[in-house]
Length: 258
Image (cartoon, rainbow, N blue to C red; front, side, top):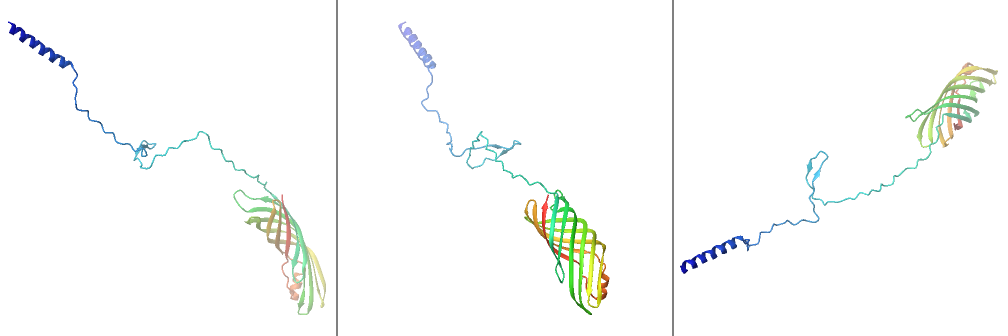
């Protein structure tokens, strides 16, 4: 009987000890494996670049540069513009000089014009009107003796002037006019009595020159001009063998641009 009681008590002790051990947490003596974290390079950062269409581009190996944008707007640079000179649409010109021949004679005139420069085109066009006078004198020898001729021209004409810029203030110009001229001519020879004639004739004139515009409204120039007309003694001179040169003149001009 005592032996059975001892065996029963021992069985209960074993069962209780096993139950207590089942409730205790299981401790693992081996440490859990550590997760390896790759070392990050402080200077190299991986970037993902997306285009506006959402396409991912390959990352670049170049270092990432962070630009800080300032909220203060940069001051706007305004270029100072000089006031433009007003355009000119008129010319007033005075000319004075000499005619060319075996002997020099005086020449001069006045010219007015109105026009300007078309938009986008560098040339200037003026409708002009001109009055002038020229004195042409020639002397020489032909078969039969010495001779002397004298021709005076008072003319009025209208036409066109064209200015063409060359460089800076330098411009060249050309004139073409049509009008009338009163021509008084005379001829003297030892074997012929003096002859004289005077009348109005149709006149054509061409001229060309160069101008330097020293101020916005003032220019100086040099001009050469030919008068294409007739006179009352031209046939007589031809009969006597006397050359009748085309009246030519060279003048200096002062031009106001208004």
